[in-house]
Image 1: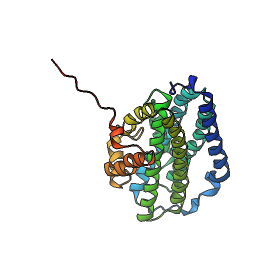
Image 2 (image 1 turned 30 degrees about the horizontal axis):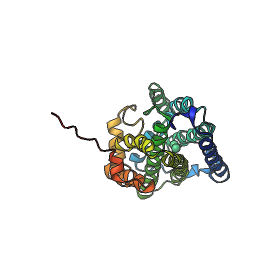
Image 3 (image 1 turned 120 degrees about the vertical axis):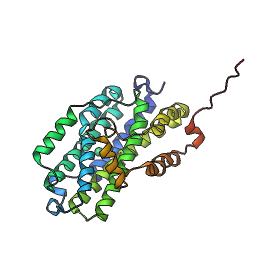
Image 4 (image 1 turned 90 degrees about the vertical axis):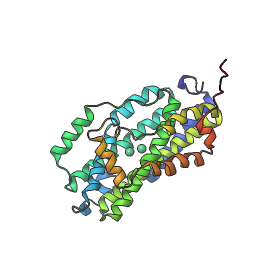
Length: 273
Ligand SMILES: [Fe+2]
Ligand SMILES: [Fe+2]
C-alpha cells in the first residue's frame, strides 16, 4: 500500500526527498520576501473599494487556521522526511500570509486592532479538521487546494488593479500568489509520482477531492460564511465557471486524466432475479 507512509518504498522516499530539496533550495534562492522591507506600505490606498478589504479579511481568516493545518498533517507524514520537512517549511511560508494580510488590513485603515483581535478570537474558537484521512488523500487535497488558492489570490490582485489600485496590496498579493503556485508545483510533482506508481489508487484519492471541492474554512468555520462566499462570487474571484475551467479541467489536462477516469470505475449492474 503506497498510501501508508510506514511502508513507503525507499526509492519513492528518496524521490520525495529530492523533490523537496530542490523546492527548498529554489525557494531560498528566489522566493524569500520580507514583510517589513519588501512591501511599499506607504502606498496603501485608503480609498480602495471596501469590497476588496472584506475579501482580504476572509482570506486572512482562512490562513489563520494554520495551527490546525500543520498540527494535523504532521502526525500523518512524520515518517516521511521529505513530506515532514516540506510541511515545516510550508508552515513558515503560510504563516507570512495571514501576517501580511492582517498588516494590510490595519495599515490601510480598513480594520482596527480591536476588530482584528476579535476576529482572531472567533477563528481560534473553532477547529479545522483534516478532510481526508490518508497521506495520499491529503496530498491530492493539498495539490488542488493550493492551486485554487493561487487562482483566488491572482484574481483578487487583478480586481485590485481594476478597482482603483493599491501598490501595497498588489505587491502582497503578487508575493502570496507566487508562494501558492510554488506549493501547488511541489504537491503536483509528488502526486505525479504516486500516479505513476499506482494510477488507480491515486485517481481514487483525487476523485472525491475534485468532485466535492470546497474552499477550506470559508464554508464551514467562518462567521457569516454565506456573506463571505457571496463577496468572493461578486468580485468574480471564484465561482462554478472558474472552478470548472481553472480547477477541474485544468487538473485533467495537467495530469493527463480523462473525464471517464475521473467519473470512476463502471459499476456493473447486477441482474436482479
Ligand atoms: Fe497561503
Ligand atoms: Fe499555500
